[in-house]
Length: 203
Image 1 (cartoon, rainbow, N blue to C red):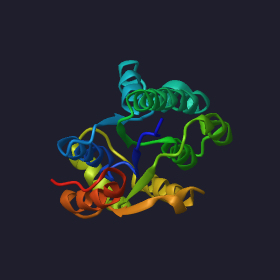
Image 2 (image 1 turned 180 degrees about the vertical axis):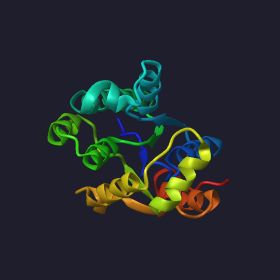
Image 3 (image 1 turned 90 degrees about the vertical axis):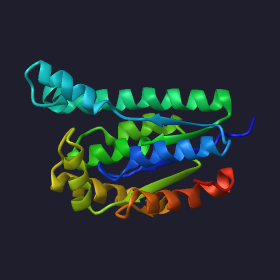
């Protein structure tokens, strides 16, 4: 069986991962390339909402520094397993909003323990066909996060995330896509990456 095409988009919060991944999926589908969008998140918004209901500021405060990364990594593993099962069962292309690298980076940026254990556990997940890193200045990313009005991000944290991505041993194999431009420019760049894998796209 031919291995399904897995196109992963990664980057700091505010880099446009979700917007661009959803749009790329729509363009692939419109062109007749069977594809689906998958958000492979660790559940942070859910844990933060639960924490506020219980009178805690966020998920980290709710679970504690030791348990929270384990919960987050387990949830992300479950979502990634679902993604792979779907793609293998259908043979269709999957556009991945986040992947294993995002867990490594968030743990590094927070200074969590257990990074090696998570890497060892995540070895069961294959590398995507291509990984696109949406490169956005942390200042731009912060403005975008604030503009959407759902959550906030400290500039220092965004800078730590960006540095952690660039320090990944896998980073040299990523396709770096400039993400500071308008959405159309970013989409065109992603189309150029996807074309050799799926055929030319038209918007």
